[in-house]
Image (tube, rainbow, N blue to C red; front, side, top):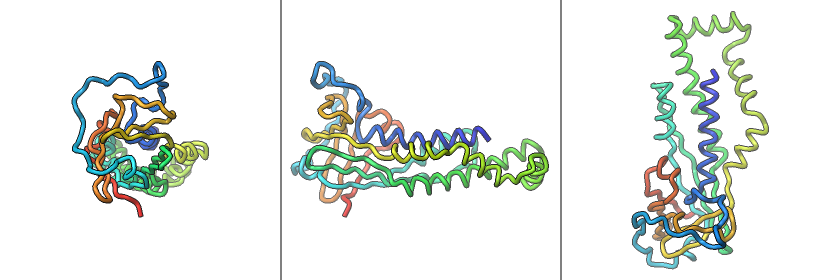
Length: 238
């Protein structure tokens, strides 16, 4: 039981971490050294063909994309529950304003809906594994569970989840689904930071804009590179 709850909480925090990282920044919370930008990292050239327009103007507005966490989540959960295979997609919105501020957020309703589907699949798998280890059927295990604890498994899970998902934790998750900061555009590079003016030459995403599509071509952000396959395409919100 503790393993199930730990997995669920870990996945919740994973989404929060991705939001905090934004489209580019391993270094959102570091202060600028010496009052300026850091030196380039010296890695490969991540540039992409120019979009042909003025990105600093074209980027203003809201952009939305479905971000698929499934690959990462399935791989992690299948280590303990081999039969798990649930999609976990969330709508990510990037809003860039003309004053240089930006907001990155995930849809909270989709987040909790996806979390509910994840829980709905994990619990039966855990029950089946426990029953097989005990050499009995799931129905026999549930009956024994109720006899021993005097409460149904369903009621037990409701109480356990309510104990873990406190009001404070849920509020923290909701806050974590939104990240506000600052951005700037240089050529085809998008820089994002939680600190005004704290941009670094080795911390950026390469983007292109064509019509109503914004493409995140590449990023120096290690979290994004580990979790997602680029490019990611965002559509301009109406």
